[in-house]
Amino acid sequence: MKTLNRQIVDGITERPIKVLQFGEGNFLRGFVDWIIDTMNEKTDFNGDVQLVQPIQHGLGKMINDQEGLYHVQLSGIQKGEAKEETRLITCVRGVVNPYESYEAYLKLAENPDLRFVVSNTTEAGISYNPADDDREKLPSSFPGKLTALLYKRFDTFNGDKAKGLHIIPCELIDKNGAKLKEIILQYAALWQLPNGFIQWINEANTFSNTLVDRIVPGFPKETIKEIQENIGYEDNLVVKAEPFHLWVIEGPDAVKAEFPAEEAGLDVKFVKDQSPYRTRKVRILNGAHTSLVPVAYLHGLRTVRESVEDPVIGPFLNETIQGEIIPTLDLPKEELEQFANDVMDRFKNPFVKHLLSSIALNSISKFKVRVLPSLLEYVDRKGQLPPNLVRSLAALMVFYKGSYNGEATPVQDDEEIVNYFKTIWESDDVDQVANEVLKNINFWDTDLTKVEGLQAAIAEQLSQLVDKEKV
Image 1 (tube, one colour):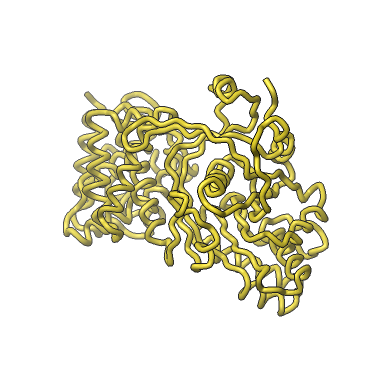
Image 2 (cartoon, rainbow, N blue to C red):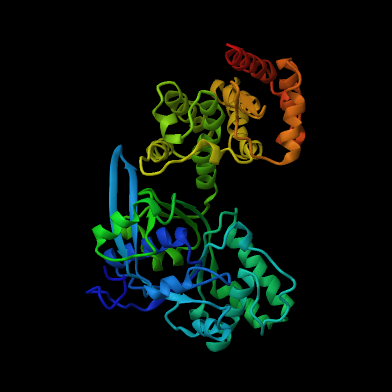
C-alpha cells in the first residue's frame, strides 16, 4: 500500500496560502482544516493553510512526510441516523517548526496572500512570559511568537494596513481573542516596539472571540487498518471526528466577508456577541454531561451512550435539558431545542465509547460552573426547585463518598476535596451532610442553604440514595 503524498493523488490544486495555523494536532486538523477544505470545494475562498508547530516536538515531520495530506473520518449520529464519511484534506501545505529555524518561521510573515491566523495551543497557550524579553530569540509563548511574526509583517510591508490579519484563536478560554490581543500589546511594550506598530495592531488587525464545538477523538488506532484499506493509502494521520460542528466567531463584518463558511453550508456563525452561545454550550452540553454522571453512575451505568439509552436515565436526562436547563436560557427556544436534540444525538454516538468516569474529573468545580447557574436561575424564574438538578446535586454528594453499593466510585479531584467528603460522610445524618456541603462557600461561591427548600430537598434525596444502597 502506497504512503499518502501529493505525487500519487491526482487532481490536487495548489492554492495561495491564506491561513497561518498555530497547532497541528487532531482538533484543528479535524475541525478548522476540514472547514477550510470544504470552503475550497464549495465557495471561491481558494486558500491553503500553512501550519506552525507551536511546541518543539510535535507532528510536523509526519505531516511533512505526507505533504500535508490526510483524511478526516466523520462518524456519529446526525438527525437520528448513523453517519460515516471520509474526506481527503488537501488544503494543508505542511508544517514549519520555529524551533528548527526561527528565520524560516518569520519569513512566513512576508507572504502577501496571508489573511488569517488561527490557533489552538491549549487553554494555557494564551499566556504572557516576561522571560521572553528578546524578540531576536524565539519566544517560548505562542503570543510571543505571534507578536514577533506580526512585527515582521508590519516591517516588511511598511505598516500597510491592507496587510493586517484576521486573528481567530480557538483556545477554550472566554474572550480568547481579546486576551490574545492584550498579551500581544504586552510584548510590544516589553520589546519597546514603535508606536506605529501598536497603532497597526489596533487598526489593521482584527481579533475575534470564538467558541468551537466538535468532539475529535483523533487517530482511530482500533480501526486504522480497515480505514486504510477503504481509502487505498497508508495514511498515518487519519483524524476521527463526529459529524456535528459549530464555530461561533465574534468579530467585524470584514471577517465574515472574507471567510465564506456559511455559503458552504457549514455551521459557522458570525455574531456580535458569542456569550449566549458559550452559555448555551456550557449549560446544555457540558451541563448535561455533569448532571448525568453521578445519577447514571449510581444507577449502575458506565458510559454516556448506555445512559442515554437506559429506560430510566435516558428520560431523566432529556427532561433535565428540556424542562430545567432550556427554560433558564435566553436564546430562541427553537434554536435551543435543536441544539439539545443535536446533543442527545452526540451522546448516542455508537462510534465513541465515552466513559462516565472520564467526565467525572473535578466534578465539584464543573457542577458550580456548568449546572449550578441553571439550578439557581430556574429557582429565580419559576419560584421552585428543579427536581432533576436537585437530584443530580444529591447524587454528586453520594458519588463523592468514594464508594456505593460496595464498589468504589471514580472520584477524581483535589486531595483536599476528596478528604473533605470522607470526613463529612463519617456521619450518617443526611441533614448534616446536606447542610455542611451546601454551605461550603469554597465549593459554590455562595451559601446554598439560603436557597429556600434546597437543604430539605437534598437531604430527602440523600436519604433515598443511602436507603437504596443498604438494600
